[in-house]
Image (cartoon, rainbow over all chains, first blue to last red; front, side, top):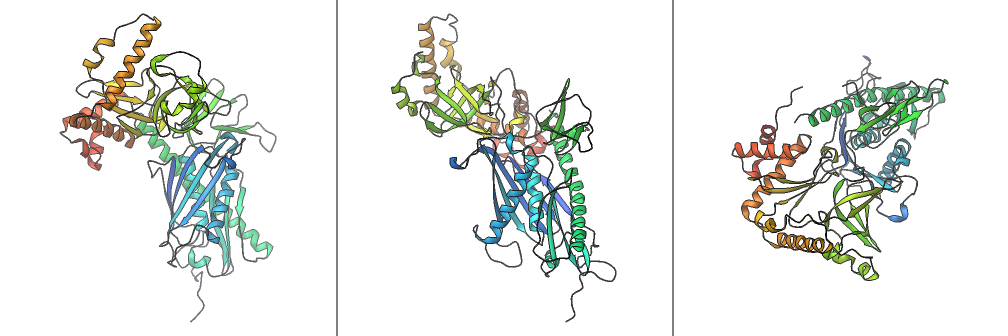
Amino acid sequence: MSRLDFISLAGLRPDGRRAKEIRRIRCRLGVLREADGSAYLEMGQTKVIAIVKGPHEVSRRSDMLIDKAIVNCEFNLAPFAGSDRRKRRPTDRKTVEMAMSIKAVFEGAVMLELYPRTQIDLYIHLIQTDGGQLPASINAASLALTDAGISMRDMVVSCSAGHVDGQAVMDLNHMEQSHGGAYVPLAILPRGSEILLAKMEARLPLDIFQEVLATALEACRQVHAIMRGEVREHHAALLAAQLAL
Amino acid sequence: MSSIVVPGQVITAEGGFLRGHGTYIQESEDGGEPQLIACVAGVVERVNKLISVRPVKSRYIGEVGDLVVGRVTEVGGKRWKVDVGGHQDAILMLSSVNLPGGAQRKRTYEDQLQMRTFFKENDLISAEVQQIQQDGSIVLHTRSLKYGKLENGQLLRVPQVLVKRLKQHFITLAPPIGVDVVLGTNGRVWITRAMPAEWTGGTSEGADMDTNVLTSKAETLMQLRRLHAETPILRDERERICRVRNAVVTLQHAFALITPDAIAAVYARSVEAGMAAKDMLQAEALASLMPQLDN
């Protein structure tokens, strides 16, 4: 069997994208009526629901901070979400790492000092996964927090980049992500391009890493444009409805 | 719709403004004027130099004098904690409730021991915001005969922004509806049947403020409440309550403001269409009950 080509001679990836092209993003805010904030987001075949509860009274009083809010994140990967059909327990190493990363990102973005002695809960449910779990989860959570009207310094956006077949590519899918090359998920505050999270488990020469990072930044900007448009549209529709009667 | 902003969007880079809610100031790196940046998604509001952003949806932020409906979560020494849907649980002090019988006196240690006889955990109460503390936590009081425990009715939660501050939040929808609605400013709506006119007939007058009269008034009101809570609700009353409830849900679904007039309008439309209360929340019905949005 010949080696799989990740980028064909025509410059196309297995799913038909070019190297510097992100997957289709579709998102909706306010999908659940009972939650303070909620959002549904698709990045290609990766599908996430994020739910925000709070700010509310701290559930364990010993965790309370008198000058700011605490963030609590629960991440759940549905047992049917990926190709391996096994249930991950909440204490699973990968699940915990995911939750910690998301928590760290939003502790950097939410203006916690505005909500002293409170708690903000993030519930992330991945219902289908095809690579880019972390970026999709962060984007969905960012939209849900916006829907909940919680103050953030900027809308957090996230996307990944990687290095396959000697090229930097944007927004890896599961196949590209799992072939063993570099995979760099990145979360930024787009206004000042402030990096909140960058991860890499592979080894890369510094100059190639710079290129991958720049690619990821550009991918985040593209994601931002789409998400900003959706947020604006959603809120315009809600405001119009309020004035209807 | 240019006045809608999203988090991180620059509202203005001109100097001389005041930073309101939903915004923050960022010093520019190149030494220019500081920028005012939105931190929530919503509408920009300007009052003279004060610029703020009102979020389209958020948790309840109290204002003194608001009527709220909440659920008691905790009974502690001298105070109750009440979940009103704010950032933190609101506080109701023992000294800010009416004692049974309307007596005005100092609260004793015995009263402290009997706090559960007034309100216990999971009770629903209506109350007024007395004070907002430095950190934004809410202090309530129920020192009026209007406020107190809510019984024998139905609670509904709607987004708090859909309930605007009105002159009157205790609403009796006129017959043929005949249903009482308590529109909590915190987005909790309490729906119950109206007091029948024959019950209240004898107590409506009595403007003189003699303490004895006041005490007896308090007592009669307590009795009325008890009567109301203990009298079973008849089938047609239940149906009217359900219809009002579904009218509010219809408005919530369309994200329209919930006002007495709007509730009555949707109610009337559903009756006109010959719709049963239970059918009001079907997808087609929801659309037909709300007037078309014309952009």
